[in-house]
Amino acid sequence: MDRFTRRSVSRMQGYVPGEQSRAPGIIKLNTNENPYPPSPMVAKALQALPVEELRLYPEPTALEVRKRIAAIHGCDIDSVFVGNGSDEILALCTRAFVEDDGDIGFFNPSYSLYPVLALIRNVATKPVELSADFSWRMPKAYKTSLFFMTNPNAPTGMLHDRSTVGRFCRQLRGVTVIDEAYVDFAREDCMDMALRYNNVLVVRTLSKAFSLAGLRVGYAVGAKPLIAALFKLKDSYNTDTIAQRLALAALSDLHHMKANVRKIRQTRARLSRLLVERGAFVFPSETNFLWLRPPAVPAEVFCKRLRERQIMIRYFCGPRTADFVRITVGTDEQVDRLIEAIDEMGLVGVPSPRGLAVKRKGCR
Ligand code: PMP
Image 1 (cartoon, rainbow, N blue to C red):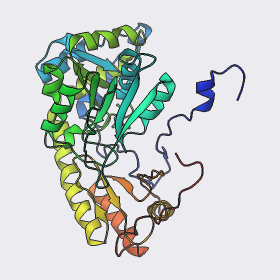
Image 2 (image 1 turned 90 degrees about the vertical axis):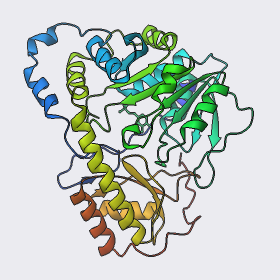
Image 3 (image 1 turned 45 degrees about the vertical axis):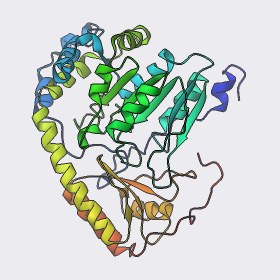
């Protein structure tokens, strides 16, 4: 602890992103990136951008990108905000919609950034525990200033149905942010609620279905006063010129994105079947990843054994998640290599029994 840093900051642990290895030969199935390249229109837009243009500041509100998003969702541009990744938008929401004595809600388990954002903002959290099968039963008379509703949820991959989400948004006095990072891989979405209710924002990202995690572009759609609040709080130039140009190109070629999504959904079904055949317990996924209890060995060991074979998947320690692993759906070739490794190492049999995971010190 040093005497210059705020106490709340000294005490907190920052967000830990998944490992970003660039080692050759690695099969990277740990951070839900898209295994296919972005639209060729993105490469064209990058080549067409004169370096001279970087001399000038970017358009501060990402106007052209917002126009395109507004056209896609059939709304006004004042209902659209573009951010430096959807992570930036989630952080802005904690600054815009939570008083200092307010609180922030989310599912447990869910995206592990939310509790960190609450710590940064130095406000209380009000997690909603999901059931043992990760389905959602809302406690009666639940209240919070801001609820992050990941739908489909991460890391479980499960979709909560629209009628339950709608009922929740209507009864919550605070703001519901529906984090639809993975919705392009799902059978339905809740965008209409952002355009109908005055307390709902839908947040999306170009990092997953559009294959642009490295670009850092996300967006929010919702009631104009909520969007106006985000504009007041953002950095002056939160998205750069390159990001704006390439995002516009990607959003102008939805056909490419949808074709990749179709492939990933097919591979998802195949991977799920192959894992079940080997004794895994696989949860129904509406995303580009699978959540499963692996066969034969505890989840952490399963993860480590695959890492020895240059295959990276994600393990989250902690009481709700320690028995499971999350595997991003890669290409069919990557899936073949994964299954080969599982078979060669004999990681097959019945799912590892619950409770095998040891509660480690320092696990968060
Ligand atoms: N929401 C969820 C549920 C996520 O899993 C992620 C990716 N880690 C994000 C938001 C953030 O996406 P990005 O900042 O890349 O737009």
